[in-house]
Image 1 (cartoon, rainbow, N blue to C red):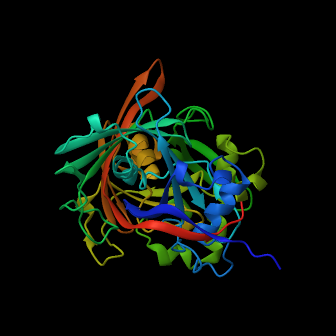
Image 2: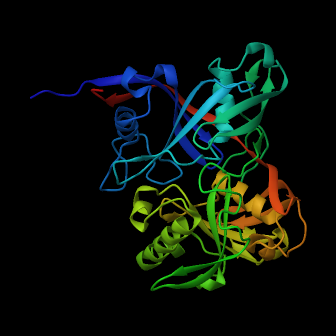
Image 3: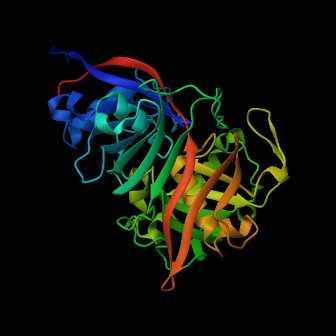
Length: 393
């Protein structure tokens, strides 16, 4: 009986924001995996330990959550005025597929540090001390991200006093600018239905007001109260309720269809990463998952979001871009939950605490245009070396 050889591939295991993933330089991948296709997907699935019917990813690098079942492939920039090309793969935990339809905003914070360390950024552009500005081409969605990476004594600075709810230890701040975040190439304009608040009919479940937006990542925002929620939910409140998960997935599928992201409801099962579904509520106090008390006065609104079929433990970076963008547009459900009116920043409460994000939006010829969304994250190398994986090409 023939056995697949176990090969070793240079890799870096990194935390970015509230996510973790395995990072690769494109040229370090086995030859068959350097191009998109089944060989690449097979490699990444095996690296992460999927598909795993036990849901644990014990035989791989994944952490058995949507936040830790992630891969990144980076290469020297191929576009003018960009330092690095960034491709993100969201690996399903229990199914044999890698979803390439969207970005990971949290891991975006780790792209700049990885690129600097691995020589993907022109050394002439890397200061010994201060801030290195890394220009990233996000290949999944065709957008530019600008990362501001702190440098000390010629090295990427990782430690610091920047605190991010959902991450236990403080670290150095990495500021991210998501330029022109509307995803025109996938589902149409900023608001693909042409309305700030739409009516989403879901047979057998109900009819909901919904803001459907393409910014950062396609996202469907609903009112918490319409779902029977308060906006203060933590993971166990949702993820231990199979009926709730099935209902939310059905709503998500109908929203994806209305946004033009799929042509039939059946396609939603193979498109788990996008769109996201989230619910919003006005400010109120709650106890975060860490035990920290969040007061109503600490936030402008509450947001809870689903990721890969589960309630996220904090907030996805790309969904944070969607929140910032929707909050900046008067009349959306997110803007309404935050009290309405014009705003350039918003602080929202999520299961792990709070997060402040900003967005620049303006009305041009009757249509809303968003030039950029801004947020801060942190990043750190957890381990570097080789990942060993059975792979025959």
